Image (tube, rainbow, N blue to C red):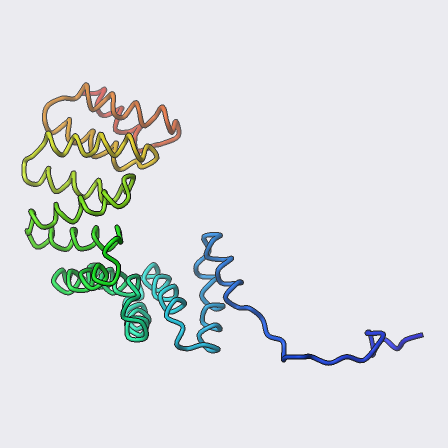
Length: 235
């Protein structure tokens, strides 16, 4: 009978010292929408490979979601230094600057992201938004349109373009953009809500009601749409 202190039937040895794949653990939590649980595992990856630009970007994104701007900026900066072609690192730095209201710095970082990856819709959208906030409307429009051309159902860029048009009083263009957005990205509530608000602003409450009803038909439990429809019916 084998002793409980010797659970294996035969002695053995390791060809290589075993180690856990912390990245797989971290990635699994990220895919499950649990970034806080992913962070400790990603940090362990960086302890093993501190120059892993890909993981640094992931860590930076988690910190950014937690509103830890300094930590996010440090992670993105290191990733960009290690790999200047890492577009996501520059996008992350742009996002940090944008959150801090530094539109000039944000635009510079998004421009570097586009230089690294000219086909990045996120970089184009970020640059467009930074330029729009700096009242550079013509340039902003071009980058929003570029983002949409790269990803035709990019709801954020479509909404940004529509809002840009509305701020310039180009209501027909704005409503056309929101309508297009609803067609290609029907699951994005903000497109319905902003289109409805535009109709109200233009004195067309019936079209606003139809838009809110479309949203409720898609999502019967949408309380924002329900309240908006009640307000419209009370007019």
